[in-house]
Image (spheres, rainbow, N blue to C red):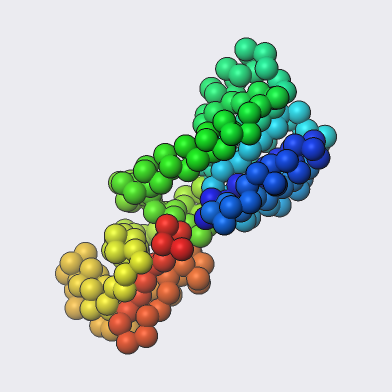
Length: 223
């Protein structure tokens, strides 16, 4: 699912894009101001289409304060077509900068390109599971872009689960992971204790219990 958050105060543009992104592969969330947009970030959009001049603030500032730290891809969609504005938007880190009036077909193509690029990048590095992302290269877990503090052993267990995302990982495999890291005798209850700690940090719904087998992380890519 390509979930898009449109932050736009022009009702005509909003209605037009609602009519454009109607295919089942898209989900379009809409906000007419930054306050509404802030509340909708909890829906974890994969892309934000962001106007710059909004009733309650500036899109550039919103990007810097909210979207950059959450690593949410952004396309600025605005009537501000001065070179300085375009350069500023791109230097902030936006994926693209589109000026109004715009071609709907071109916008859709650029939106799809962002999702395609993100999927390509994620396949080699970052795995997403709801609000949690795990960077396989950096061995880091984040919730909504914020780094989650994990112990070395907790991180090893999480790495095992995300390496085998969308597959059941047996309790014995987790036991082996703990034993390899500590060299100490490991008991079945130890797995339960560590899984409880990790779930407390990530959220209960990220790691699923597979009855009679072990545990599984379901990635967004498999949904």
